[in-house]
Image 1 (cartoon, one colour):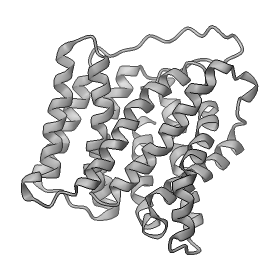
Image 2 (image 1 turned 90 degrees about the vertical axis):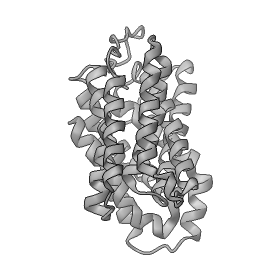
Image 3 (image 1 turned 180 degrees about the horizontal axis):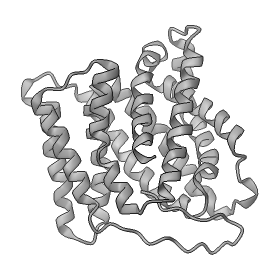
Length: 286
């Protein structure tokens, strides 16, 4: 289920490329969040009655981070190959894992991953898209914050319940930049059903699979699996977008994956104790 979730996320990103050409990356991200909200509310009603005042800041922050993580990443995919964008983005959560670790040597893994990213971007060739790299790094920063906030929110709500509260916030947060791109873009009839189909893949199906997987896996096991997402991004980019990596770029992806897997050693988290008896069973998350 975890592998299927990661493949679904990268498939949704690849399928978003034609929509990006029509309504821009921010418009595409906003449409995905809007349709995601509709689908999630059809599946699970928001657990508004269980909300506490102290929950609101974390929910709002997670929603905003989720929306801009998607927006920044799609802005990167518009400019650089999918596999490269995922690898650069992965520096975010990997750096957070290194900083949060009690072991100083854990900081070596983000540095190793950075070496892999250098092989992926090949800056010595002179044709690197710095704006695309910048968007990927911004998405990575959001991804790192997303992991921290998801862990906090996940201690209070189950996956689908939490998503039904945060994805609407993501839609509202990205509306100021997403709606103008949709209105001012080359809007054609197939954009809405395409965006709806992509939203069904991610966030609905992919995030749902993640939550089911997290109920059966430890934090460390899931985090280790998560480290192969850059490889999945490269594979999906090749199969769907015909983005063929060079040998050096393949080596770069392998280095990033190895660094991500190594960073998870000793990172197991004990299940949180929930003080509120009205809340649902907590999950472990990354």
